[in-house]
Image (cartoon, rainbow, N blue to C red; front, side, top):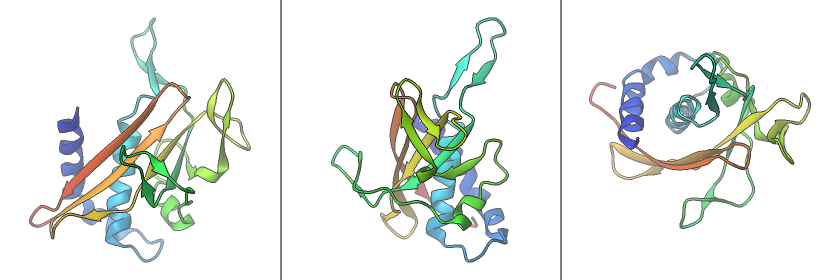
Length: 165
């Protein structure tokens, strides 16, 4: 599965120049990379289920929440207080099929998992750590998600800049 993530991220890195046309304000390379990781997790998570009568994949999740952590344990688990993204960062996802909101707008509800504090809609909470520079063309980001208490993922993404990208 890791090779699929790497391939997906490689494709996204090729198209990253299109992210720079974002009119919402100053953009940093670190934010661009974190956006790529979140977008990868948005389309590669375990929030869907197969409808036995149609065979199609359905999603119970109606909203995505994102947050940042500055520290991680030796096992890549987030530590410390979560940090909400800025409104500008959230606006990068306005084209996504599900609404993307700050994690502070979510809560854990017993028996349901992550839900929107105001609408009660079931959600998925994604997190990302800081970009760790490995060398002049390679970085690493720890990121993942929490779903309903029965599903979670912690990932170490290694992204490499390609000539011309």
